[in-house]
Image (cartoon, rainbow, N blue to C red; front, side, top):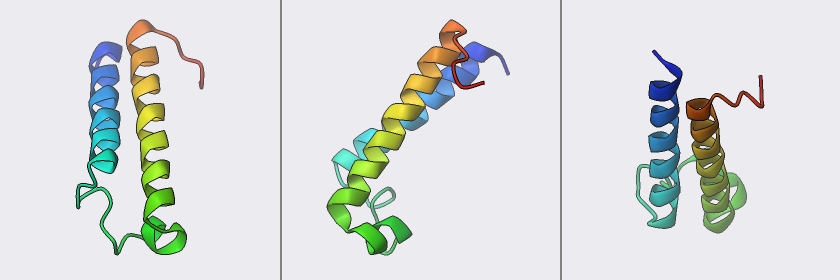
Length: 70
């Protein structure tokens, strides 16, 4: 798998995580998940959004050849 393909996959996964948390999709923010049980809905959704943004940034960096975590 090339760096561009891997970057696009990371961007799509990150985008789905952000949109899913923002729109309160059940697959992302189900009330029985561990983060929701420990922190509550609002903090868990914030964590999901931050993780999604991080994945999108990693994907864009991978597409442009910037390996800033490796």
